[in-house]
Length: 281
Image 1 (cartoon, rainbow, N blue to C red):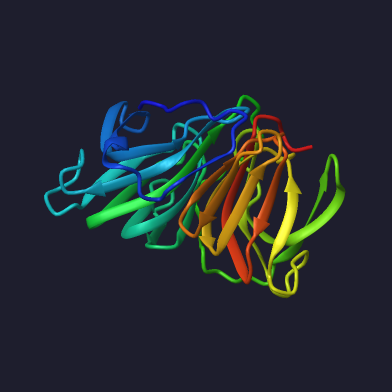
Image 2: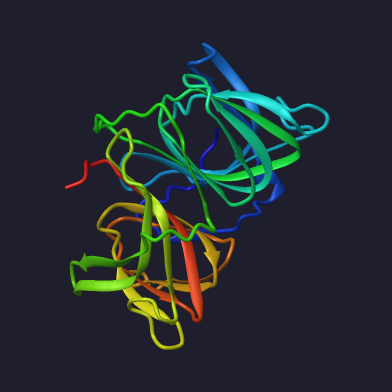
């Protein structure tokens, strides 16, 4: 696997449709098989973070990809050996079987999949095409948390547990901006948090037209985002760089860099993953 220019300390964005030359065979050491395996193709979006081992990007499976059948289907043994994984299915469908328990999950577009490091699974991917967005993190400080199962959710879930997002900025103090739901509260090492966040008309911290403006320095850790709905403007207040994002785009926010985030009305929703080498305070 090759990596791109370091992202430590940088805010930047990407598209859910990497260029053809950005894809390469996905090769890794699979402990469950006791050997190197090559399955599908990856395009790395975020090759690192400010702490721990952070990777994010896309994986796809199709006819002609390593390991795939002529119809684009295939079976993959995967134990997430690189770290805890947080993923969203963008295209296609698959059946995931947890080897230890025999539990099976059907996943398709919009499915959110949380995998603990070391959990052996069998992915039966259905042709002709499958694509997912993934974030993998591994840190030096184990949490002691163990799991023999996946957490499965969906980007369209609307649970009763949406709560106002209260946080403290080093310069601006206590703020309440938008609503969030936490779907993954911990990982096997460091800090791993993930869920959904939204802003818009009638939501905490938003203007009457749904616009929301907030300072943000990622005090909890590096944040990797898949924008699900709406449009966002991000300004790096340290470099004066600015970006405009739309649904389907990716956003990388490094911990400790002060940005101004503007959600354009009437509504914005994102899938987020926060990671940090340090254990939660």
